[in-house]
Image 1 (tube, rainbow, N blue to C red):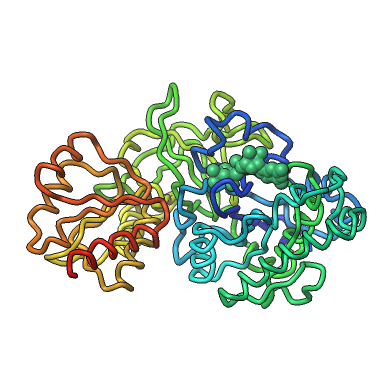
Image 2: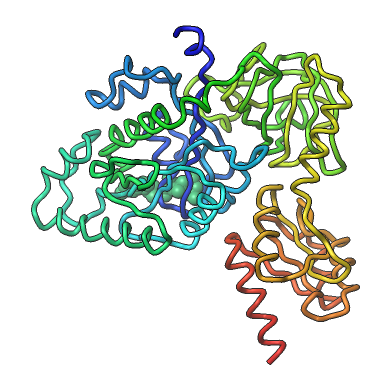
Length: 452
Ligand code: GTP
Ligand code: MG
């Protein structure tokens, strides 16, 4: 009925995959703006969110999507740069994203960050589809801009089609090696037990109609119940990033996945030193269909309902942490909300012991993911924190009894200059990598060498 339809929230779609496989280009193609071009280099520096309303989806998908078949308001896409762990996108009790698009360059196949993404999707039980991107780079390809996949494949020569299929089946094989049964999306009946592969090109727009149709269908079919939320209640969200915004000082980019946040709400935000209690000064929204990260195009709004990405300006946000919870207090007792946030932060807190390695990561989610991996490898942790590698971390590492623990493992962070100097002086080894399992592998190789 009409009333329940009015409170269906937008599904949150995470776009993830290996560096350069085309995540940003894909979103860019969908929203028809030039985010890729505005980026420094070709690398996306920040996480952003893009809301695509149903009517736009239906416009792009053309004959494939009849908007009257759907009652979800659209899709909220979150772009995760390849060097940024998808695990940042966490929420109370698991993944922030409802569904995901795993982007894989069809020529390049599975790569380290593809594997890492697949691991996290499996661990958080996030349903996903695979966008087999860059089909237009198949030698001899005859591009048919913005055309549905099967139609453009039919327009290729037998040889081109054969080459593409070879790559696609290799991809399906890679998925199967990782315990996911997958097939071309038009052959998948049950998307809950089979991964659909959608051949696309972010360059020519081929297959984009199919991709949107499949995503929309998936959310409508399997997620409608989860999308029925009390959008009128106090908001719950996750900090994606702490940023400085001209005229506002420290702000947070957040995804609101439940309830509503208003411009003068009291909020509690997870911070480095514990929960921060503050009051919203402004809710800043990028213009519709624009990248949330694009500077200078903000519009102040009075309220935002789930699901949506929003920049929140409020005093005392300097110490807020990426991956931490945000809660609107509403008519609840502020102490109860503080306790909730404290409990959620404690939930993420890494188990530390007297003797072990120092661990630093860029967000709570990546710290959690790294700690989980270290735990599985039985590598003890003496200290685990969000933030760059600083001299005080070296001070902790140098007190270790064993050489293999005189080490700091950094994921997605920088090493401050005086920290590298001090580390050298104190014979502390620093390991850095932007792929978690590679970081752990490098560390283990070092330990093995020492023990030989
Ligand atoms: P990170 O954010 O760095 O992880 O990369 P990304 O996955 O967002 O990749 P991005 O969209 O920046 O694309 C990387 C490069 O591949 C760019 O030069 C794009 O123009 C190119 N590219 C992306 N998709 C396609 C495609 O479908 N066809 C072709 N020919 N090039 C593509
Ligand atoms: Mg990108």
